[in-house]
Length: 233
Image (cartoon, rainbow, N blue to C red; front, side, top):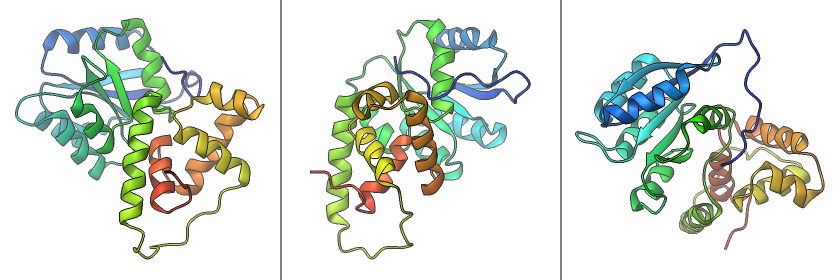
């Protein structure tokens, strides 16, 4: 399980608003129970298919969505794509029975922050929600490598595209951190690699996202590849 980028928000702050989406009522109930006892997390709604998820996300404005990959009427991938198009800051975690599902790769390309296996220990779910809300990606290194390869191909295809806007300038250290994020490393691994503290890594990641005006580490990697800030082969 990846470590969250930040600790839980202090008492008195607004709770993290969570929407649960799964076509199995038992799974929805289990997730709701796992989150209900947390003072800093509020389950604002539940949906049983992708169509309902899109409608509720628009009405309830959640911070985090727990989204089943495969559902009737509209899949989790389609719902993810539509929710991210209308509300880019929403963090979407795909719920899946296997990290080998082909759909999972498409879901992450559609804007999901990562995935959560349905056999996860329920007491781990609140920390996952907190971590994703603060910008952590739940993507293993193998999948990160596959995604980066795809983005590199995309970048080469767009090589002739003229820049749309001036690319924000990152410091040398921020670029080092971004390159390691692109390799699928978490904060602890980056800190060890660069001989700095985890808090310093968190600060660099936060500065990168602020400069690029993005919401997650994976979005920053996609942007950097597309704008040819990173050379990935």
